[in-house]
Length: 307
Image (cartoon, rainbow, N blue to C red; front, side):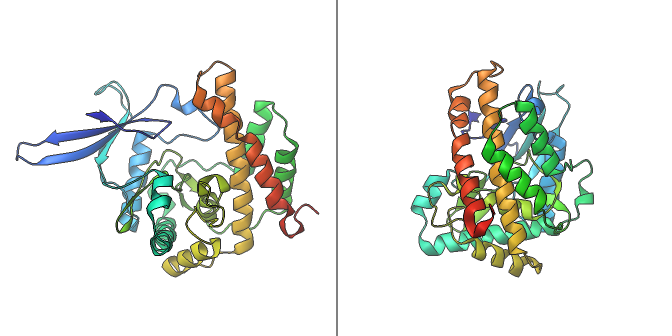
């Protein structure tokens, strides 16, 4: 066994198994962390729910690791767990972006759009127990609970309430689809990881989150995940799924995603400052709150959204 980097909410281990047939099997063990369900404003999926989501995603055609077993019963290993196959490739965003040519970025962007279209075509009723919070209520409640007033966040939330588009449907939503949670190899997208924020909701949430500035990793000229244009992402999603993407609604979800990340940064800092989890990393994330305030004001200023 070897600890794997990444995965802030759960421990992740690489496991090499030598079977009785003489073959070597490369697996990944994801282990629950104590108190993970109280770590943030969003529900953290149980291991069994995460496994069910991975299976329905695989059946729909999204590239994901194959689940071997999962259990919310800690009796066997001393913690809740999920064991899957290990997918070879790169997951560190800056390495992916630094090494990819223009053509490779466009290919990966198209694959991301197609993967999301496949997931969103799956029946969410096929995964019983998916949480289905109203996002505006969720983030309003957490802004109030944190007690850290932000004029920029308040302005953004009020704009979101006033301009909320009709839902684009109901789907299985990954909840954290972005570089950093994707395995990429020489052929492009190899696997989608980290399903602990999976839920039931509007499919455009995943597309908007992918385009949040924080997940461009400095590649601001390529607003869709640091890979290319938002229009290219939407077009690839449409080609793969046959469902039109409302560009104005997608932009609304981009604004909401930016607000969401800002509130999460506040929450992470609060975990450190309150003494719940003393961590330099959490303190550093808290310093990024102001970046999201800036990004929100810029988004709302475009096309006169602040008027």
